[in-house]
Structure formats: C-alpha cells, structure tokens
Image 1 (cartoon, helix red, strand yellow):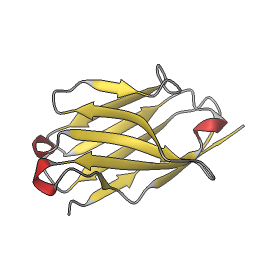
Image 2 (cartoon, helix red, strand yellow):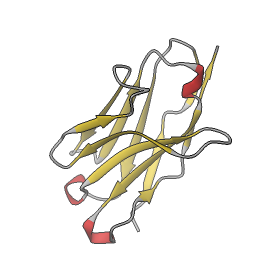
Image 3 (cartoon, one colour):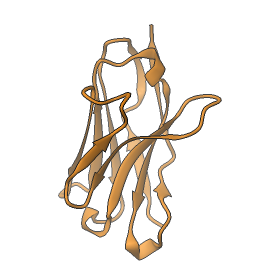
Length: 118
C-alpha cells in the first residue's frame, strides 16, 4: 500500500484561490497516474484533473482554465492549484495514484475538505 497525505484544504470565498498538495510515500517515477478527484455531498466522486507519467494533463470541463495540476518529482508531490473558486467547487478532494507495482487499481488519500462560500 502507498501512503498518500493530502494538505491545503480549507474555507475560501468565491473567487478566491487554494492550493492542495498530495505527498506520496513512493517515487513519482513509479506511478503512471496521479490525479485529484472530488466528491460533494450526495454526489458521485468525479475526476477533477490528472497528470500522466509523461507529464500530460487533463481536466474536467468544469475546472478548465481555473485549476492546474502539477508534479514535483523531487518532493514526491502532486499539487492542485485552484483559482476563481466557485461554491460548486465545494467538496472533499482526494488524491489518487496508480502504480504497476501495486496492481491496476487506484490508491487513495484520506481526502481534504474544500469549502467555497458565496
């Protein structure tokens, strides 16, 4: 099992910014998928953004142009910078990774709450 520790959630007003960080207890070079998901109350967990081992990134349409995912191989972190936040961005955000060393499934962090007030 790979330990993932998220940090950086909190309360922010609409239009504000927050940064999330996920520290993995494994070299990022052993991961072929690193992403951020979110789950709002009563809703299904959805993929927000992911970054592949080649550095390519993908975003949900709802966050394109506002969120940026990045990785720091030296620190083993995957970060999500969120700008122009909206109340509908309120959710628990989860870091998820996949490593061939640990099978085909995703490995999850514990989640961090992001609340955007209107």
